[in-house]
Amino acid sequence: MRFKVTVVGAGNVGATLAQRIAEKGYADVALVDIVEGLPQGKALDMLQCGPIVGSDARITGSNSYEITEGSDIVVITSGAARKPGMSRDDLVLTNMNIVRSVVERAIRHSPNCILIIVANPVDAMTHLALNVSRYPRTRVFGQSGVLDSARFRTFIAEELKVSVTDVSACVLGGHGDTMVPVPRLSTVGGVPITELLSEAAVNRLVDRTIKGGGEIVALLKTGSAYYAPAAATAQMVEAVLFDRKEILPCAVYLEGEYGISGTVVGVPCKLGSQGIEQIIELRLTESELAALRKSAESVRELARVMKLE
Image 1: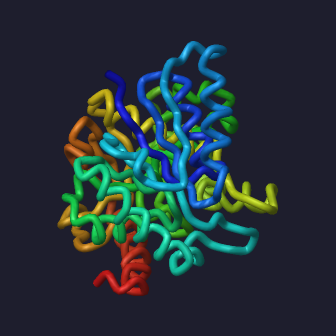
Image 2: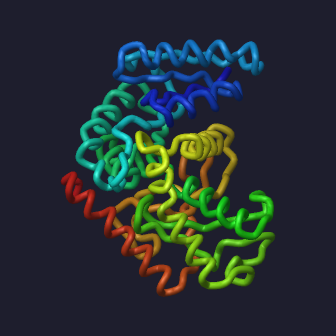
């Protein structure tokens, strides 16, 4: 029996994620969107890839949530995308009502699901989803640091002309301008990049990582990144479905970890079949910890805007 994954939002991120999951064949996919015909058409197109890629997974599109019944995981990608000049935080009021409605309908049909939030600003939307669902924090978390660390790894690998598979990167904090890349804990073959690159080069890569999403928005002009966000979310989905106990950075509600309580922020977590099975507390320097707490406070401000506190 295959797993079942619902993807809410048939835009670029949602459709790309649905295709990744369906083509691997380990889960049936329900694709939901409010635009008439959009999820149905994309799902039918993806379904017809099956004979070519060798996948018998079923993918179904609909404008209603009945097809999502009994999902193991519900991924919420729906919401407005960033436009040039917009920050992720500018989306909070626009996407707040969308995410609230989606969560309410999704959990009605899949009360035992795990919720993975991708809609931006993802930290604030994760906090909202946790509030609306009333699920334990282990079952509601956001995709942020997997994408941010992938960007950092890419830039490090390009700079040093090494394989990305040899690069490990640590990025903490909110998924936005206050994110906290940690060069001291980012390595190539186990060697910290601070020993391989000049301070100026490290700072340049850190800055590019923080602005990584905006760089793509500026180039596309009419949309935002979706290939890497979909790949990052797929990694999280697989870590849960296959109980991999994988250590991945996730946007999670903290209850005293790192001295932070009552807000969502990106930190390393062990992901398995129960969702977040452990929050990993790294030994940070005073400056790193201060930056993480500052990032958490910026997310807390968005929660106040949504009246979650």
